[in-house]
Image (cartoon, rainbow, N blue to C red; front, side):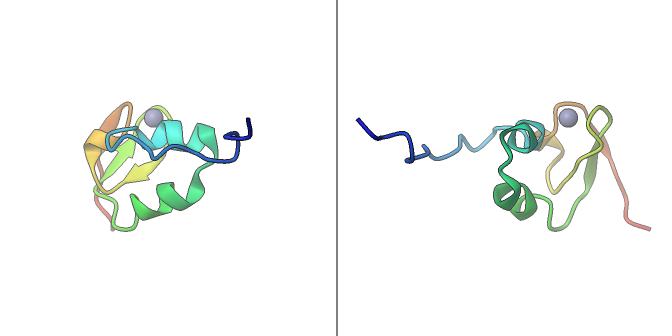
Length: 61
Ligand SMILES: [Zn+2]
């Protein structure tokens, strides 16, 4: 059994914070290309506030 290499697709609503912990930077980048929110806990930025564990609105200066 070598299904070890085959990663299952991510659930759509997995938080970016969990992606960071999983080291999935590619998926993380994809979801933070035009950030509108920042995580108060992890400091991550995301396109969608719902992608963060403690999302707060964030505005680029
Ligand atoms: Zn977070």
